[in-house]
Amino acid sequence: MSYRLVGVARTGLVVGGLVGLVITPAFSLAYFAAHEPFGSPPGWLESVDLSLVGAGGGSVAIYERHGIAYGLALLVVVVSLVVVVRTQVGMGRRQRRAWIVIVSGLGAVTAGTIGEYGVFGSYGISSDFWTNNAFGLELLGFLVIAVGTVLLGWALKREEAVSVGRSTGIAAVGAASLVLGTVIVGHIPSGAASLLLIAAIVVGVTGRAKTVSATAEGELGMRT
Image (cartoon, rainbow, N blue to C red; front, side, top):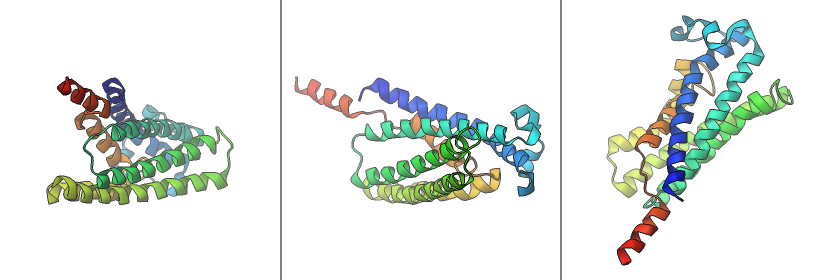
């Protein structure tokens, strides 16, 4: 793959991550506005004017529009991540397997989000049964991601001699995002994915840019 494609993918990680984070407060507020019996937003969100984020009126339709936008942001992130991971050279077998687990989990979260708010929401088929199943898929995806980040932390320690502190931090990202994000934001999937979106931005900005095709071209140049 060309540097241009990898560059687009890294930009996709950054843009998708940023868009998802920007949507998160509005998405959470829209949820509580549309489903008041389920409680109130966390204290840090209560002071935000709902009309400023388009979540006023308690409309389920407005809430689902936020969900669709959030799902599309996740889709950009997961597609970009696939490209970035596939183009890395020198990645050990354990790392690659861990990334497969993480991408699979993120794909499940993305599919569940788009299904819950788009395909099976009021803008689509409008089925409570399938909406609940889509939400279950999101939860399953987050659990898979938590397992994947543990595997990635372990793989980096074994294959690249990453420090214990750093590998432990990476291993904890999935579970921390699910637990802390949900507590802080008060909503799934937006809260549970918050740390994951930050991680996607970091990968997009700082990840290795060396591609398989570039490496092959470099080796060919050395031979000639």
